[in-house]
Length: 205
Image 1 (cartoon, rainbow, N blue to C red):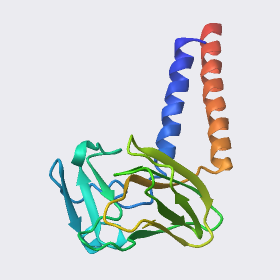
Image 2 (image 1 turned 180 degrees about the vertical axis):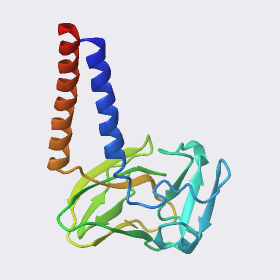
Image 3 (image 1 turned 30 degrees about the vertical axis):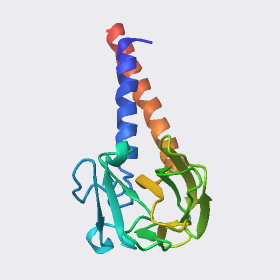
Image 4 (image 1 turned 60 degrees about the vertical axis):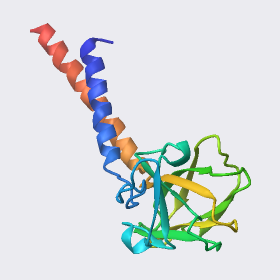
């Protein structure tokens, strides 16, 4: 393959990446960076003061206890709010297209022990997560099909007490439809074929 062909393919790949990146995350403030928290500190915010999220108060950390965020600087502790040892939950509702597939992803880890647990719910589905550890972040990913014009994502603690689950980098993105991938593939072949045809004509002349 010639250098020109390689450049063509790389350029086309860049176009594809740009196209897919246009399917930006539907979650607002999924990495919890909108609120300022000093390094090695934590702060509790009313959910009304945390962009995108509703529900219980939100405790945001910045590199506290040596834990580095999975994305950016901030992350949350789901169920640590002063002396209240209840079950805490935060949620966010976002627009979806009925029948369209979406990918949910986020990072999670335990704070104090490996038995900490929480539940994630989305689009009428739910899953309990108990496999995280203090050693590092675990990535959760799942594909779901929207059944309504809006979908709700929620995180709920399953432990009593005031110390628990850490969560960061929450994203929901639309899965590219097969027609989009097929159209790109056809366009890529046409682009490469067109360049070859022009080179052949140039050689013939």
